[in-house]
Length: 581
Image (tube, rainbow, N blue to C red; front, side, top):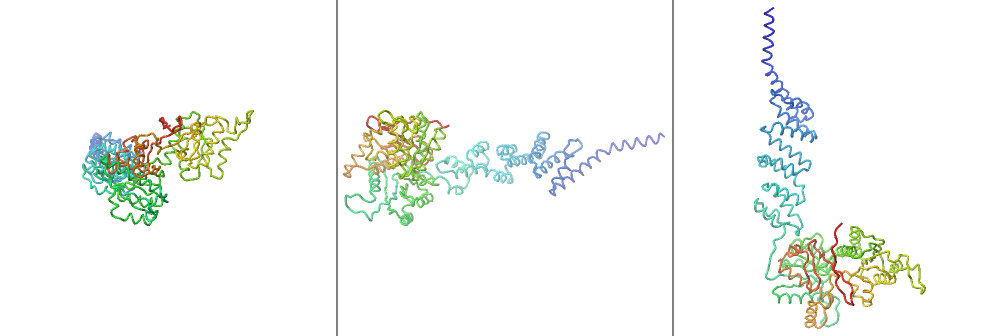
């Protein structure tokens, strides 16, 4: 009996001695089976096989590996949240595990998948050895290439200033920006610091600014030289010749101030074929500035030439943003039609207490574009547009009817109330230069005799039949980017010099030509060939004959002055700022 008891005790003791080894063999067998599932990409079975092995046991040497491959199996099964939770658990429970960089790699990948780029980069930064691996660089390039926002990449680079991948993506993103927005200093520093090949960015990089002793300005105008005759009679293209005379005179003025302009004139003859031939001339590539073209059918040709050769092109007269197109080298000296609409809405919102407004516009594209911008900005400023109507010359009488159809008279048969009640509206915006249209508005508002303010355009001053006393009495306000007071000292000097030289009074186009060349000449002198960089940094640049310019927010002049009659003279109106809502 004692012998049996001893045998049982020996068996129990032997079992206790060998059980850890048996258990270790069992853990090893389970782990090996789970790894086979994983290696064969049977990730669902792998998860089930690894699950019992991820529970901590002092006798289980595979807990860290099992937890890691469980996470990877979950990732491949498209359970990223499960995978991330397991990887986080590994970091918390086994921070000294030798394969922790791999844990961070996969956490970074999950963050990248979820577009949490900054968290992903933080995971990689915890173990610098990761960033030396080729597969990690490829992963960063793969995911970060989708970021197009320069500011996001700039912030990332500031957090990871030694990261070559981030630096290169930032440099590339900057180079893809419009030239006016490119941070030249930053991209140059990145190329230098990381020894990038500048040729990779050269095609889209902003050209290096240049200052010269003499600047080449090439006019692409329809001079129609073959049709000109040596007579004093008005020419078919007199407006173009007047513009040229103003430009030429400004060149002489600039020379006396130490600013040298090599003015070259090319006759486009209003012909696309002739324009193509001119653009094939090698000498045109030496231009620092192209002026024109003045006709829309030639704009695309010159625009392509401008982009391909990185030469600025500018229109001194156009307000059409189609001139700009996708060309970072194009500028409009005048406010665009869109800007005129926007500033007009802002002026009314700031100056007319009654927020009810009517809008009339003509059938031209210019009128339509101006009105669309006006209406959009008016809505933002909470103006109440009670009517917005396109009017043809044939039905222009409808304007008067809408404004001044009487419904009540006084004892002398004078209208005292109208279908549109007195003082029910505060303003009328008129987007048209056609006298047939705007005179109907003026007549209607005059008949009403209330406090309606009309906002129009300085071209209304050119109407020979206009009664300026009525303009003053009705407080008519006009957009006036090219208006110059006759008493302006600069204008008097220009006018007197022009008369002495040419024997005639300068026309409006001569004045525009002079102002244009004077402004551009001083910009070239002050800021170099790519002067748009310099004027962009200025909120306002004073003109010589005109009020001034603002190119801080675009490629067309954003400054729009307003005028009205006061004491029998035209005066500028100081325009208060309007806050954006």
